[in-house]
Image (cartoon, rainbow, N blue to C red; front, top):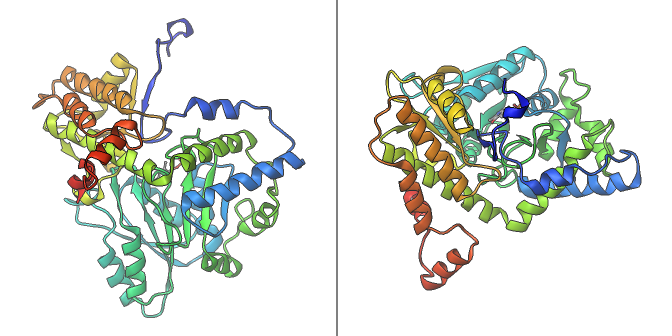
Length: 423
Ligand SMILES: *Cc1c(COP(=O)(O)O)cnc(C)c1O
Protein backbone atom coordinates (compact mmCIF):
# COMPACT_ATOMS: atom_id res chain seq x y z
CA UNK A 1 0.00 0.00 0.00
CA UNK A 2 1.15 3.52 -0.76
CA UNK A 3 1.36 5.85 2.20
CA UNK A 4 -1.13 8.67 1.81
CA UNK A 5 1.60 11.29 1.61
CA UNK A 6 3.19 9.33 -1.25
CA UNK A 7 0.12 9.54 -3.45
CA UNK A 8 1.36 9.92 -7.05
CA UNK A 9 0.92 13.34 -8.61
CA UNK A 10 -1.32 13.95 -11.62
CA UNK A 11 -4.17 11.71 -12.74
CA UNK A 12 -4.02 7.95 -12.59
CA UNK A 13 -4.41 6.41 -16.06
CA UNK A 14 -7.34 4.00 -15.69
CA UNK A 15 -7.08 2.28 -19.07
CA UNK A 16 -8.81 -0.97 -18.14
CA UNK A 17 -11.95 -1.92 -20.08
CA UNK A 18 -14.18 -1.04 -17.18
CA UNK A 19 -14.49 0.67 -14.84
CA UNK A 20 -13.65 3.39 -17.35
CA UNK A 21 -12.55 6.94 -16.49
CA UNK A 22 -15.53 9.00 -15.25
CA UNK A 23 -15.88 12.55 -16.62
CA UNK A 24 -15.73 15.31 -13.99
CA UNK A 25 -19.16 16.48 -15.15
CA UNK A 26 -20.63 13.16 -14.05
CA UNK A 27 -18.75 13.14 -10.74
CA UNK A 28 -20.07 16.62 -10.00
CA UNK A 29 -23.64 15.61 -10.85
CA UNK A 30 -23.30 12.69 -8.44
CA UNK A 31 -22.18 14.93 -5.60
CA UNK A 32 -25.62 16.56 -5.25
CA UNK A 33 -27.52 15.81 -2.03
CA UNK A 34 -29.42 12.53 -1.94
CA UNK A 35 -33.17 13.20 -2.12
CA UNK A 36 -36.35 11.48 -0.88
CA UNK A 37 -36.86 8.52 -3.20
CA UNK A 38 -40.65 8.81 -2.72
CA UNK A 39 -40.79 12.59 -3.24
CA UNK A 40 -41.98 14.48 -6.35
CA UNK A 41 -38.51 15.53 -7.46
CA UNK A 42 -37.42 11.91 -7.60
CA UNK A 43 -40.22 10.90 -9.99
CA UNK A 44 -38.96 13.46 -12.49
CA UNK A 45 -35.42 12.10 -12.29
CA UNK A 46 -36.72 8.53 -12.63
CA UNK A 47 -38.78 9.32 -15.72
CA UNK A 48 -35.86 11.17 -17.29
CA UNK A 49 -33.37 8.33 -16.91
CA UNK A 50 -35.86 5.57 -17.75
CA UNK A 51 -36.79 7.40 -20.96
CA UNK A 52 -33.25 8.40 -21.91
CA UNK A 53 -31.72 4.96 -21.43
CA UNK A 54 -34.13 3.52 -24.04
CA UNK A 55 -32.48 5.73 -26.63
CA UNK A 56 -29.08 4.27 -25.72
CA UNK A 57 -30.35 0.70 -26.18
CA UNK A 58 -32.21 1.91 -29.31
CA UNK A 59 -35.48 0.48 -28.04
CA UNK A 60 -39.12 1.54 -27.66
CA UNK A 61 -39.63 -1.00 -24.88
CA UNK A 62 -38.99 -0.77 -21.12
CA UNK A 63 -35.49 -0.84 -19.65
CA UNK A 64 -35.08 -1.95 -16.02
CA UNK A 65 -32.40 -0.24 -13.91
CA UNK A 66 -31.03 -2.27 -10.96
CA UNK A 67 -28.85 -0.99 -8.12
CA UNK A 68 -26.42 -3.86 -8.81
CA UNK A 69 -23.32 -4.73 -10.80
CA UNK A 70 -23.63 -6.26 -14.27
CA UNK A 71 -23.58 -9.74 -12.75
CA UNK A 72 -26.91 -8.98 -11.08
CA UNK A 73 -28.45 -8.01 -14.41
CA UNK A 74 -27.19 -11.34 -15.88
CA UNK A 75 -29.09 -13.15 -13.13
CA UNK A 76 -32.15 -10.98 -13.67
CA UNK A 77 -32.24 -11.82 -17.40
CA UNK A 78 -32.09 -15.58 -16.75
CA UNK A 79 -34.35 -15.72 -13.69
CA UNK A 80 -37.16 -13.60 -15.19
CA UNK A 81 -37.48 -15.52 -18.45
CA UNK A 82 -36.61 -19.16 -17.70
CA UNK A 83 -37.67 -22.06 -15.49
CA UNK A 84 -35.52 -24.58 -13.59
CA UNK A 85 -34.29 -27.37 -15.90
CA UNK A 86 -34.65 -25.29 -19.09
CA UNK A 87 -31.97 -25.81 -21.75
CA UNK A 88 -30.10 -22.71 -22.88
CA UNK A 89 -27.64 -22.45 -25.75
CA UNK A 90 -24.54 -20.35 -25.04
CA UNK A 91 -21.35 -19.66 -26.99
CA UNK A 92 -17.83 -19.63 -25.57
CA UNK A 93 -16.46 -16.30 -26.78
CA UNK A 94 -14.26 -15.86 -23.69
CA UNK A 95 -14.19 -15.44 -19.93
CA UNK A 96 -17.44 -13.49 -19.56
CA UNK A 97 -19.41 -15.98 -21.66
CA UNK A 98 -17.94 -18.70 -19.40
CA UNK A 99 -19.00 -16.89 -16.23
CA UNK A 100 -22.54 -16.42 -17.54
CA UNK A 101 -22.71 -20.13 -18.31
CA UNK A 102 -21.54 -20.95 -14.76
CA UNK A 103 -24.30 -18.72 -13.40
CA UNK A 104 -26.87 -20.58 -15.55
CA UNK A 105 -25.67 -23.84 -13.95
CA UNK A 106 -26.00 -22.38 -10.45
CA UNK A 107 -29.56 -21.32 -11.23
CA UNK A 108 -30.52 -24.88 -12.17
CA UNK A 109 -30.60 -24.31 -15.92
CA UNK A 110 -29.02 -26.72 -18.41
CA UNK A 111 -26.57 -24.69 -20.48
CA UNK A 112 -25.10 -26.16 -23.62
CA UNK A 113 -21.81 -24.39 -24.39
CA UNK A 114 -20.82 -24.23 -28.07
CA UNK A 115 -17.09 -23.64 -28.66
CA UNK A 116 -14.54 -23.43 -31.43
CA UNK A 117 -11.54 -25.82 -31.37
CA UNK A 118 -8.90 -24.87 -28.75
CA UNK A 119 -6.56 -23.27 -31.32
CA UNK A 120 -9.24 -20.76 -32.39
CA UNK A 121 -11.08 -20.45 -29.12
CA UNK A 122 -11.41 -16.95 -27.59
CA UNK A 123 -10.16 -15.28 -30.80
CA UNK A 124 -13.41 -15.16 -32.82
CA UNK A 125 -17.00 -14.07 -32.38
CA UNK A 126 -20.15 -16.12 -31.97
CA UNK A 127 -20.60 -18.46 -34.99
CA UNK A 128 -24.23 -18.00 -36.09
CA UNK A 129 -24.12 -21.07 -38.38
CA UNK A 130 -23.34 -23.31 -35.38
CA UNK A 131 -26.28 -21.80 -33.49
CA UNK A 132 -28.56 -22.34 -36.48
CA UNK A 133 -27.43 -25.97 -36.94
CA UNK A 134 -27.99 -26.75 -33.24
CA UNK A 135 -31.45 -25.14 -33.23
CA UNK A 136 -32.43 -27.06 -36.40
CA UNK A 137 -31.71 -30.30 -34.52
CA UNK A 138 -33.86 -29.20 -31.59
CA UNK A 139 -37.19 -30.24 -33.11
CA UNK A 140 -38.97 -30.39 -29.73
CA UNK A 141 -37.90 -26.84 -28.86
CA UNK A 142 -36.25 -27.85 -25.61
CA UNK A 143 -33.84 -24.92 -25.92
CA UNK A 144 -35.58 -21.91 -24.38
CA UNK A 145 -32.94 -19.22 -24.90
CA UNK A 146 -29.79 -18.40 -26.84
CA UNK A 147 -27.35 -16.36 -24.67
CA UNK A 148 -24.40 -14.54 -26.22
CA UNK A 149 -21.95 -11.78 -25.35
CA UNK A 150 -21.90 -8.78 -27.70
CA UNK A 151 -18.49 -7.35 -26.75
CA UNK A 152 -16.32 -10.03 -25.10
CA UNK A 153 -14.31 -7.89 -22.70
CA UNK A 154 -11.79 -10.64 -21.96
CA UNK A 155 -10.61 -10.80 -25.59
CA UNK A 156 -11.59 -7.62 -27.46
CA UNK A 157 -13.80 -9.48 -29.96
CA UNK A 158 -17.34 -8.38 -30.79
CA UNK A 159 -20.10 -10.58 -32.22
CA UNK A 160 -22.67 -9.93 -34.93
CA UNK A 161 -25.90 -9.98 -32.91
CA UNK A 162 -28.23 -9.43 -35.87
CA UNK A 163 -26.67 -12.52 -37.50
CA UNK A 164 -27.51 -14.53 -34.36
CA UNK A 165 -31.11 -13.33 -34.63
CA UNK A 166 -31.20 -14.34 -38.31
CA UNK A 167 -29.84 -17.79 -37.35
CA UNK A 168 -32.65 -18.28 -34.81
CA UNK A 169 -35.24 -17.16 -37.36
CA UNK A 170 -33.73 -19.34 -40.12
CA UNK A 171 -34.15 -22.36 -37.84
CA UNK A 172 -37.73 -21.20 -37.21
CA UNK A 173 -37.05 -21.65 -33.49
CA UNK A 174 -38.95 -19.86 -30.67
CA UNK A 175 -35.92 -19.50 -28.31
CA UNK A 176 -35.44 -16.10 -26.70
CA UNK A 177 -32.30 -14.14 -27.57
CA UNK A 178 -30.49 -12.84 -24.45
CA UNK A 179 -27.44 -10.63 -25.03
CA UNK A 180 -24.76 -9.35 -22.65
CA UNK A 181 -23.72 -5.91 -23.89
CA UNK A 182 -22.29 -4.89 -20.53
CA UNK A 183 -19.13 -3.49 -22.11
CA UNK A 184 -20.49 -2.78 -25.60
CA UNK A 185 -23.39 -0.44 -24.87
CA UNK A 186 -22.76 3.28 -25.47
CA UNK A 187 -19.37 2.64 -27.12
CA UNK A 188 -20.11 0.08 -29.84
CA UNK A 189 -23.21 0.25 -32.03
CA UNK A 190 -26.04 -1.66 -30.37
CA UNK A 191 -29.68 -1.94 -31.52
CA UNK A 192 -31.98 -3.83 -29.17
CA UNK A 193 -35.15 -3.55 -31.30
CA UNK A 194 -33.71 -3.70 -34.80
CA UNK A 195 -31.58 -6.77 -33.97
CA UNK A 196 -34.55 -8.55 -32.39
CA UNK A 197 -33.01 -9.00 -28.93
CA UNK A 198 -35.36 -10.15 -26.14
CA UNK A 199 -33.24 -9.16 -23.15
CA UNK A 200 -30.15 -6.94 -23.36
CA UNK A 201 -27.99 -6.88 -20.24
CA UNK A 202 -25.69 -3.94 -19.49
CA UNK A 203 -23.84 -2.12 -16.72
CA UNK A 204 -22.84 1.39 -15.73
CA UNK A 205 -19.05 1.32 -15.50
CA UNK A 206 -18.07 0.77 -19.12
CA UNK A 207 -19.44 2.77 -22.06
CA UNK A 208 -21.82 4.79 -19.92
CA UNK A 209 -18.79 6.34 -18.13
CA UNK A 210 -20.32 5.93 -14.66
CA UNK A 211 -18.85 4.34 -11.56
CA UNK A 212 -19.86 0.69 -10.97
CA UNK A 213 -23.19 0.16 -9.23
CA UNK A 214 -26.14 0.14 -11.61
CA UNK A 215 -27.06 -2.33 -14.33
CA UNK A 216 -29.79 -2.84 -16.89
CA UNK A 217 -32.20 -5.25 -18.56
CA UNK A 218 -33.73 -3.96 -21.80
CA UNK A 219 -36.86 -6.01 -22.54
CA UNK A 220 -38.94 -7.09 -25.53
CA UNK A 221 -42.70 -7.81 -25.42
CA UNK A 222 -41.84 -11.50 -25.93
CA UNK A 223 -39.49 -11.41 -22.91
CA UNK A 224 -42.20 -9.81 -20.76
CA UNK A 225 -44.62 -12.54 -21.86
CA UNK A 226 -42.06 -15.23 -21.01
CA UNK A 227 -41.63 -13.67 -17.55
CA UNK A 228 -45.33 -14.25 -16.87
CA UNK A 229 -44.88 -18.02 -17.45
CA UNK A 230 -41.39 -18.64 -16.06
CA UNK A 231 -41.19 -20.35 -12.68
CA UNK A 232 -37.63 -19.56 -11.57
CA UNK A 233 -37.85 -18.17 -8.00
CA UNK A 234 -37.02 -14.44 -7.96
CA UNK A 235 -37.67 -11.60 -5.57
CA UNK A 236 -35.34 -8.63 -5.90
CA UNK A 237 -34.89 -9.19 -9.64
CA UNK A 238 -38.60 -9.60 -10.52
CA UNK A 239 -39.52 -7.31 -13.39
CA UNK A 240 -43.27 -7.04 -12.66
CA UNK A 241 -43.13 -4.93 -9.47
CA UNK A 242 -40.36 -2.77 -10.89
CA UNK A 243 -42.26 -2.09 -14.13
CA UNK A 244 -45.34 -1.05 -12.13
CA UNK A 245 -43.38 1.41 -9.97
CA UNK A 246 -41.30 2.66 -12.92
CA UNK A 247 -44.44 3.82 -14.72
CA UNK A 248 -44.35 6.91 -12.45
CA UNK A 249 -40.57 7.17 -12.21
CA UNK A 250 -40.20 5.27 -8.91
CA UNK A 251 -38.83 1.92 -7.71
CA UNK A 252 -40.30 -0.64 -5.30
CA UNK A 253 -37.21 -0.18 -3.07
CA UNK A 254 -34.56 2.51 -2.53
CA UNK A 255 -32.75 2.95 -5.85
CA UNK A 256 -29.22 4.23 -6.25
CA UNK A 257 -30.14 7.93 -6.27
CA UNK A 258 -26.70 9.48 -6.79
CA UNK A 259 -25.80 7.04 -9.56
CA UNK A 260 -29.08 8.00 -11.23
CA UNK A 261 -27.95 11.66 -11.13
CA UNK A 262 -24.79 10.46 -12.85
CA UNK A 263 -26.80 8.49 -15.39
CA UNK A 264 -28.89 11.59 -16.18
CA UNK A 265 -25.69 13.50 -16.88
CA UNK A 266 -24.20 10.65 -18.96
CA UNK A 267 -27.38 10.56 -21.06
CA UNK A 268 -27.15 14.31 -21.67
CA UNK A 269 -23.54 13.92 -22.76
CA UNK A 270 -24.03 10.86 -25.01
CA UNK A 271 -27.31 11.93 -26.62
CA UNK A 272 -26.03 15.49 -26.98
CA UNK A 273 -23.01 14.23 -28.87
CA UNK A 274 -25.14 11.78 -30.88
CA UNK A 275 -24.68 8.01 -30.80
CA UNK A 276 -23.19 7.86 -34.29
CA UNK A 277 -20.40 10.17 -33.30
CA UNK A 278 -19.87 8.29 -30.02
CA UNK A 279 -19.43 5.05 -31.98
CA UNK A 280 -17.15 6.69 -34.57
CA UNK A 281 -14.99 8.12 -31.79
CA UNK A 282 -14.44 4.66 -30.30
CA UNK A 283 -13.82 3.03 -33.72
CA UNK A 284 -11.13 5.59 -34.38
CA UNK A 285 -9.45 5.07 -31.01
CA UNK A 286 -9.51 1.31 -31.57
CA UNK A 287 -7.88 1.76 -34.97
CA UNK A 288 -5.16 3.98 -33.47
CA UNK A 289 -4.39 1.45 -30.73
CA UNK A 290 -4.30 -1.45 -33.21
CA UNK A 291 -1.86 0.50 -35.40
CA UNK A 292 0.35 0.83 -32.32
CA UNK A 293 0.23 -2.92 -31.61
CA UNK A 294 1.03 -3.66 -35.27
CA UNK A 295 3.94 -1.21 -35.20
CA UNK A 296 5.34 -2.95 -32.10
CA UNK A 297 5.16 -6.22 -34.02
CA UNK A 298 2.90 -7.82 -31.39
CA UNK A 299 -0.20 -9.89 -31.97
CA UNK A 300 -3.81 -8.75 -31.41
CA UNK A 301 -5.97 -11.34 -29.65
CA UNK A 302 -8.92 -10.82 -32.04
CA UNK A 303 -8.35 -12.75 -35.28
CA UNK A 304 -11.28 -11.25 -37.23
CA UNK A 305 -10.73 -7.66 -38.37
CA UNK A 306 -14.47 -7.12 -38.93
CA UNK A 307 -15.03 -7.93 -35.25
CA UNK A 308 -12.29 -5.80 -33.66
CA UNK A 309 -13.73 -4.26 -30.51
CA UNK A 310 -13.95 -0.46 -30.47
CA UNK A 311 -13.87 -0.68 -26.64
CA UNK A 312 -10.64 -2.50 -25.91
CA UNK A 313 -7.70 -4.24 -27.58
CA UNK A 314 -6.18 -7.49 -26.31
CA UNK A 315 -2.39 -7.53 -26.81
CA UNK A 316 -0.68 -10.95 -26.83
CA UNK A 317 2.78 -10.91 -25.26
CA UNK A 318 5.57 -12.91 -26.92
CA UNK A 319 6.29 -16.48 -25.77
CA UNK A 320 8.15 -16.43 -22.43
CA UNK A 321 6.96 -12.93 -21.43
CA UNK A 322 4.45 -12.87 -18.56
CA UNK A 323 1.82 -10.29 -19.48
CA UNK A 324 1.03 -9.68 -15.81
CA UNK A 325 4.69 -8.83 -15.16
CA UNK A 326 4.44 -6.26 -17.96
CA UNK A 327 1.26 -4.85 -16.42
CA UNK A 328 2.83 -4.67 -12.95
CA UNK A 329 5.90 -2.88 -14.30
CA UNK A 330 3.75 -0.34 -16.15
CA UNK A 331 1.60 0.25 -13.07
CA UNK A 332 4.59 0.71 -10.76
CA UNK A 333 6.58 2.91 -13.12
CA UNK A 334 3.91 4.99 -14.82
CA UNK A 335 0.77 4.89 -12.64
CA UNK A 336 -1.16 3.30 -15.52
CA UNK A 337 -3.68 0.45 -15.06
CA UNK A 338 -4.17 -2.06 -17.88
CA UNK A 339 -6.56 -5.02 -17.99
CA UNK A 340 -5.20 -8.41 -16.97
CA UNK A 341 -5.54 -11.60 -18.99
CA UNK A 342 -8.60 -13.41 -17.63
CA UNK A 343 -9.16 -17.16 -17.28
CA UNK A 344 -7.47 -19.06 -20.12
CA UNK A 345 -5.67 -15.90 -21.24
CA UNK A 346 -3.96 -15.28 -17.88
CA UNK A 347 -0.32 -14.25 -18.34
CA UNK A 348 -0.65 -14.40 -22.14
CA UNK A 349 -2.17 -11.01 -22.86
CA UNK A 350 -3.00 -7.62 -21.44
CA UNK A 351 -5.93 -5.43 -22.43
CA UNK A 352 -5.91 -1.74 -23.29
CA UNK A 353 -9.25 -0.01 -22.68
CA UNK A 354 -10.17 2.81 -25.06
CA UNK A 355 -13.53 3.88 -23.68
CA UNK A 356 -14.91 6.37 -21.20
CA UNK A 357 -13.43 9.80 -20.60
CA UNK A 358 -10.44 9.46 -23.00
CA UNK A 359 -9.00 11.55 -25.77
CA UNK A 360 -6.21 11.15 -28.31
CA UNK A 361 -3.50 12.27 -25.94
CA UNK A 362 -4.59 10.13 -22.98
CA UNK A 363 -4.34 7.19 -25.38
CA UNK A 364 -0.93 8.34 -26.63
CA UNK A 365 0.22 8.50 -23.00
CA UNK A 366 -1.23 5.03 -22.43
CA UNK A 367 0.59 3.65 -25.46
CA UNK A 368 3.79 5.41 -24.31
CA UNK A 369 3.52 3.67 -20.93
CA UNK A 370 2.93 0.32 -22.64
CA UNK A 371 5.86 0.84 -24.97
CA UNK A 372 8.28 1.71 -22.18
CA UNK A 373 6.99 -1.09 -19.94
CA UNK A 374 7.30 -3.71 -22.68
CA UNK A 375 10.90 -2.65 -23.28
CA UNK A 376 11.66 -2.72 -19.53
CA UNK A 377 10.40 -6.32 -19.49
CA UNK A 378 12.77 -7.29 -22.29
CA UNK A 379 10.30 -7.36 -25.19
CA UNK A 380 11.99 -6.45 -28.45
CA UNK A 381 9.68 -4.10 -30.29
CA UNK A 382 9.69 -3.73 -34.05
CA UNK A 383 8.97 0.01 -34.04
CA UNK A 384 7.21 2.74 -32.06
CA UNK A 385 3.52 2.05 -31.60
CA UNK A 386 3.03 5.38 -29.90
CA UNK A 387 4.32 7.18 -33.00
CA UNK A 388 2.13 5.07 -35.32
CA UNK A 389 -0.97 5.96 -33.31
CA UNK A 390 0.00 9.62 -33.16
CA UNK A 391 0.42 9.71 -36.95
CA UNK A 392 -2.97 8.07 -37.42
CA UNK A 393 -4.68 10.52 -35.04
CA UNK A 394 -2.98 13.48 -36.70
CA UNK A 395 -4.02 12.36 -40.19
CA UNK A 396 -7.60 11.56 -39.13
CA UNK A 397 -9.04 14.31 -36.94
CA UNK A 398 -11.50 13.26 -34.22
CA UNK A 399 -15.13 13.16 -35.45
CA UNK A 400 -17.10 16.30 -34.70
CA UNK A 401 -14.03 18.54 -34.36
CA UNK A 402 -13.55 21.61 -36.58
CA UNK A 403 -10.61 19.84 -38.27
CA UNK A 404 -12.79 16.83 -39.15
CA UNK A 405 -15.55 19.09 -40.50
CA UNK A 406 -13.05 20.95 -42.64
CA UNK A 407 -11.66 17.71 -44.02
CA UNK A 408 -15.17 16.47 -44.85
CA UNK A 409 -16.00 19.76 -46.61
CA UNK A 410 -12.80 19.54 -48.69
CA UNK A 411 -13.50 15.93 -49.68
CA UNK A 412 -17.20 15.08 -49.27
CA UNK A 413 -16.66 11.49 -50.50
CA UNK A 414 -13.74 10.91 -48.15
CA UNK A 415 -14.19 7.92 -45.83
CA UNK A 416 -12.36 8.13 -42.53
CA UNK A 417 -9.40 5.75 -42.71
CA UNK A 418 -10.67 3.75 -39.76
CA UNK A 419 -13.75 2.70 -41.74
CA UNK A 420 -11.73 1.91 -44.82
CA UNK A 421 -9.42 -0.34 -42.81
CA UNK A 422 -12.36 -2.30 -41.40
CA UNK A 423 -14.21 -2.72 -44.68
C1 LIG B 1 -17.78 -6.22 -16.86
C2 LIG B 1 -18.51 -7.33 -17.51
C3 LIG B 1 -19.33 -8.21 -16.80
C4 LIG B 1 -19.45 -8.20 -15.31
O1 LIG B 1 -20.02 -7.06 -14.83
P1 LIG B 1 -19.87 -6.67 -13.28
O2 LIG B 1 -20.37 -5.28 -13.21
O3 LIG B 1 -18.41 -6.82 -12.95
O4 LIG B 1 -20.71 -7.62 -12.49
C5 LIG B 1 -20.02 -9.17 -17.52
N1 LIG B 1 -19.91 -9.27 -18.85
C6 LIG B 1 -19.10 -8.46 -19.57
C7 LIG B 1 -19.01 -8.63 -21.05
C8 LIG B 1 -18.38 -7.46 -18.91
O5 LIG B 1 -17.57 -6.65 -19.62
